[in-house]
Length: 352
Image (cartoon, rainbow, N blue to C red):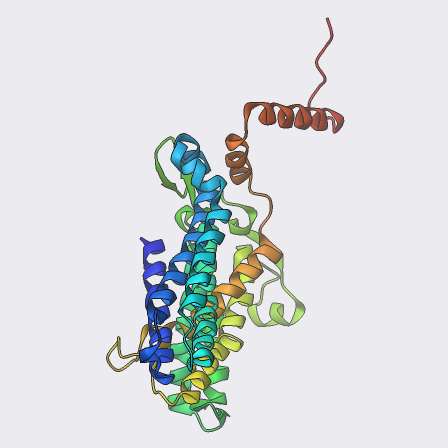
């Protein structure tokens, strides 16, 4: 259901940005513009979601012959679909509208980069564990609310001209509040397997499962406090989940860099003299107005996981092995056995 929610938000954000381009550039007479825009959205989603199916549903795909063909030639099919759209765009070029048509072609592709690519990263984060989805998203929401409250009650110093209502007091107050919130949220969620276990598809039960032995990241560890904290807390050691330390990095980004996604959106709207991306939510603008910071946050979380967290995933490697031909599986087995014998983990077979 969360995958469907992310997809629905992505489609709506794409629609809002494309509609702005349609109105700003007065593209009413351009042939096939809207049709091609949605076609490219379909192509890019087919590519990304096909990659997800290949990664996380390998054992299921192995049982379905038709799906095996689609997965094996997935990238070629995706590229062929894109080429078809590219050719349709070239054939749709009409005299006196060349420049405008290329403007809109670029507009469509930048919109795809902003919405589809980054929403795909949200899904990748989700499969690492619900906690990597919930803590970043809730941190951005917390920062948005607390920055507003601090700015409303204590704000005196303007922060940036793009958003005249933003103040330094709100920015700093939002930062400290978000770090505290993220630290507490990380502590609460780290206790439950449902939130910390990577989401995996099990073919034997034909469903997703979130059961595992939590990694060290989600097991309580004892840390020695630095001297200045020892004096404040009056204790030398403290028990924390390592993820709580990582949550400080996530919350810091959400409160210091994340708002620049909102500033970017504000600059975009000012450039085209519009107040909101749409009027989907009465009094709050469009969906894109609410998710301008979330996409930037999702990209950071994905980069953070791949850089500092993720190691080899045995389950994913096993799924990939099961798709191979029996001869290839046997070769890998022999190579792995030889490697383990050389390291002394396995004993060599006794010759009779």
